[in-house]
Length: 354
Image (spheres, rainbow, N blue to C red):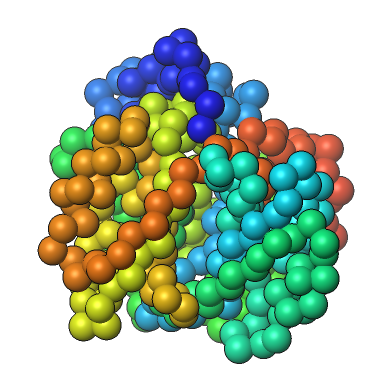
């Protein structure tokens, strides 16, 4: 990645606020102040500064953990292209709704991407469209078999154990799930809950009053339903921030070969490492994929030479990301104000107060 000047890295106070939001995306200023030993006024001022220009966004996670860590219905793509054609291929991929993530590596001719697909299908992008593109020299695909760690579960390691414990959500209540059909973000919702999830998707910190105005539901209903979703662990938020702004300018993709009898343990070990923001068992010769953030190349070397030892890994291929070409939702984008967004119709009779 490009160098980041010292004054563009957020202060430790701001980084700690980012980390607190990772634990609780709808954290109030008062609770954050109490846990982080700050004044509520300072928290409000810093949160406003961080969110007003899109430096930090809190959204509903676009990817939810599959039940029991199973298949996420997605492919990892590794695409090599002709020199000089990289930008054109990246732009074409970025325009597709079924591709939420695109990274360009420092090699200058290599793209890593994630494509949503049906497990076991002959995805037309992989089987026809990319191979037929003259600028593409090779395509490798791997199906995600098991999820060990998602980016929405990664936490910036700047809080104390006591602070993390104070911010960690309670265990979901398994006996309070509501009936409904599967909606986006991996939750089962009824129409009222779905409208709230949709409204929160671009800005998960909207107040209950703003949500009520945006959706047409009574504010008391909004508060009750949001609390219910949170207690059931079905309101999964994600903090969007450029990792360079929190002192982590190096992102590495790791393609690992692991002996089958070590695969589960290696994946779990990676998921528990503070640098790793993604870990997945996959098909293909590299049966464990991981992504991690580091403050510098020395830290990456230490991770490779020390932290991977003893995990049954027989081969490691490391690719350093030079540019995050697409994130869904996009980094740095400021969501439209709910006041300017198209209002949804109020819920039909019998839905608003359920």
